[in-house]
Amino acid sequence: MATINGRYVTIEKEDLGFDVDITQQPVEREIDVSDHVQCKARTLSLSGLVTGDQAAEIHRYLIETNDKGKIVQYTGRSTFRGLMSGFSSSRDYNIANGFTFSMTLTEVHFGNASYVVNLPTPVKVQAAPVVNSGVKQTKENKNNPASTPKKTSTSAAKGK
Figure 1 (spheres, rainbow, N blue to C red):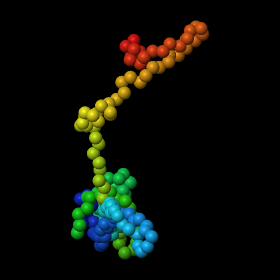
Figure 2 (cartoon, rainbow, N blue to C red):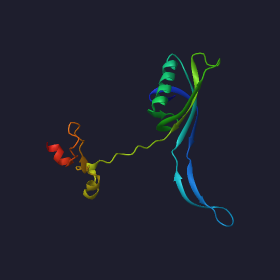
Figure 3 (tube, rainbow, N blue to C red):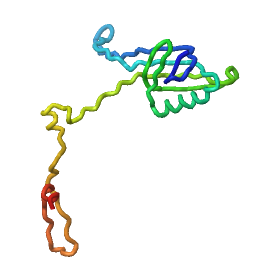
Figure 4 (tube, rainbow, N blue to C red):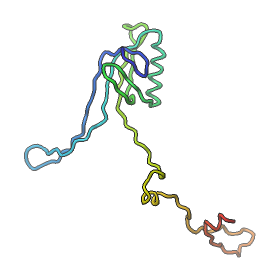
């Protein structure tokens, strides 16, 4: 028995995918020259079935997990952690109390956010917030049309 986030499923087939991008440059004769290889995200395609009293709850959970983009931990013949990038299910006369399904899990990596506090001093100075936004023009006084607009500094206006 395999599990998807702790829920038991019967898996008939697992297909692991290890795709790469290979850049190629054309040359005058013979075949193109390949000069770079970059790994794509790994994928795991599953097909199986769920039967029993919990089948409806597991089906609802799998659809919810797919729709909300939750991370899935799969444990079976292989162990895989990723997002569901495809899910389909079907019901027919062969399985009275459950459903068959197929899904694709895709490996994901999450980057860490860099904070200004953790940056080195030269970079921190460049990332500091703007304190003075320049000179702003005040609105004209409606009661006295002869008055001219005055320019005030933002830092001076804050002190008033």
